[in-house]
Length: 403
Image (tube, rainbow, N blue to C red):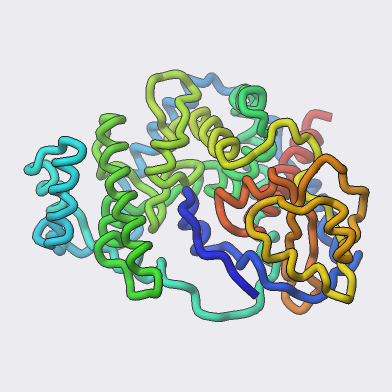
């Protein structure tokens, strides 16, 4: 079956490391898989015994977060970069000329920057496609995210940022649990934001991307992100070498690529800066804004997914090829042999989603536009479903702490 290529997304690193293929039809679903899925999520939430955190003043929390970010820069980074003097590479010199002509950078400044950039072989290796391995397994993937440590951290994050989450929900119409789910899946609420220098990895991948069928397109993408990183650093008046992130250049609590910070970043704490590394409020507002800009429908208050069963005739199979959008009416699903566990609201469109479980039966779900908005963050059904499940588990665990 067809698979979707990786998209321009702020969580490109997470996609390469953890995302599952979006479409590979599997065996017919069984009701037992649905029950196991719901039971597992509920048990994980019950097992998260998070203490009720006291609210922390925004200014103090922000100051502490920035101190942590500054300390991270001072630590040893996660790779041993090679000094190759990128400033001598003709393609890099052409890039520097463009930054001077297009954005008014000083040529001497560009040359000085590029002389400090290091080549990162580990980024080249990590960006290569993973070799064929075991069949994709949704249950195994889910267990990495829906577990007590991450749920406990989510409860603390929600308690400490309740005001910003409530304000984002009111402003953008994205439920707090979705925002909590994304930040939890991405970085465990800021614990794992990456310790690669963004300039090193972006320059390496822009000018030394490994041989691949899509090499030219991917190199162009990283070249654009290098440009965006320099523009971001200049706009925010920060040393570009202090920008740390994933091996693919994703930054901060929500793992936005530099271009997405410029496009969708929000100064949600009102201090005049967009800081996705040190401001949890900015991270929360930016994730909400990204989702709305990518199709989140605030008016849709129903569930983002409804579990379905599929007929042995497999007339529904072509519906899996419809892409990352909700284009099917309820009657179209029913006519193709798709039966929902509960009645589908008539005023919505849906897409058919398959979650493979290795040798066990595949799960099938009818997904709304809001589910597909999450896949624009990371083009993986596994990812989007994990966001939904983690957010719900954190909400339930948090509710248990206030009973």
